[in-house]
Image (cartoon, rainbow, N blue to C red; front, side, top):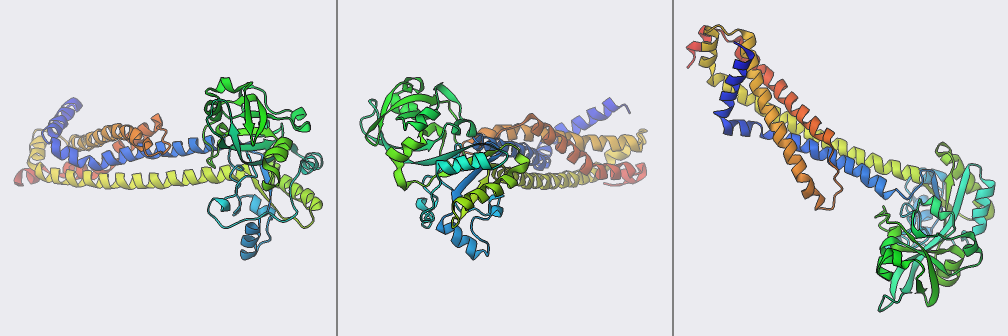
Length: 447
């Protein structure tokens, strides 16, 4: 019997039992759809991590004064507070709301404890300054740049607003732009002259510019009041999107650090320092050296150091772990679907023993019988794979409605289809082999 005749016979058997084929392939359909969605969710997680950390340099290191909460946790855990080991990816309890890993470390703002946790107070008498920044850049090898950052909220008013609104205010040095990968839509960023002269100039985030001035481009050259003092808008940032801490450069106002410290935030804010290591392989050494410099400046001070690379690696690892777990679930679904195919084909062999006997009596050999049943299993798997892939891609918009980042890939559909075909072929082989082993007399004698 020619192979085309075998395929025609298989097609007849499948079309005459549409319901049975659909139910048989249901497990494969679910498995294929799961594979598509798993890969889409996994890739979406990677994209999400990249999006959240896009304002960070891999060699970025944040330095903050350890809080009383940090020290209490460290003592409870039997480890001195502010040890460099914490910074290298350990359990760091302090996260400034405007700081790492938010939009380029607008650090020093409201702590997590003020958002609902227990109170955390910086060590009395220890406050980071621009002098510490100078010491770090001049004394620590492999540090390319550094900036002190402080953040908080201030009452803002423009001619386009009916009343003052509280907005995020970030005080920083000119180096902050390159440290945080901030792009300007129009205008200029803060300059050293602005910092030295405590100039009342501001750079506004993209979304906030539209809110305060009615348009991003309209904001440049505009005037706003912050805490009752007038500031000139010298630049507007390009849209950056949401970052990991929920505070985006799009919704912040950037002032020279000296200006923010004197006129807006005063002594209420806790500054942090962000330094950039020139070599990512030397981050640990740079962190240790920074800690040494600060300890010399503040012998009784305790400091917490965290690096962007460890945070990014941890986030990526978590996303990959989730993907692997979901892939394991998809494989289990495929196995269940394959067992279903095998069981149905076993029943089909029992039902069609006389058909097998007639085919063998007409001259069909074992190979041709094996091909027939194997092709049938293969078609069921292929059908389930095609439907499952289509269903998987169709469900992507539904998952996006939940707020999840889902980025489907063509390779996901290919892998799902391959898995489906392999599942049908592997689990269909044994029933097909059993059918091929039947002798004509044995097959014809069964009812």
